[in-house]
Image 1 (spheres, rainbow, N blue to C red):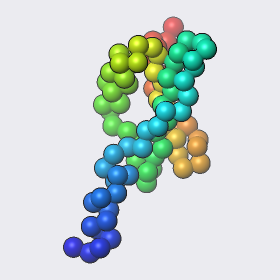
Image 2 (cartoon, rainbow, N blue to C red):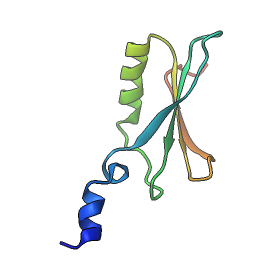
Image 3 (cartoon, rainbow, N blue to C red):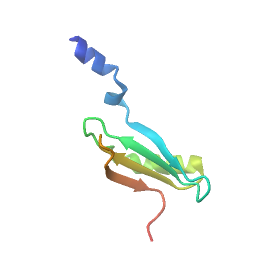
Image 4 (cartoon, rainbow, N blue to C red):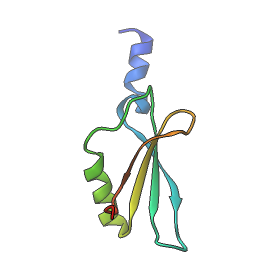
Length: 84
């Protein structure tokens, strides 16, 4: 196995999505906004909606998730708040 392939095995970006807390509306509705930065333009899987529902249960308030490209452009978004 070449060194590059071996190092890719230990690169978290290859295995785990990079999701960070982006904003918390502490003075308003307490919504939590998470931001996923795509690595190699890989989108999140279909399981994302269930994951943010679980985070919302833990958080106790609305949770939003944005998936952005390397320039910060929002490509996809999810929201636990049902649309009216």
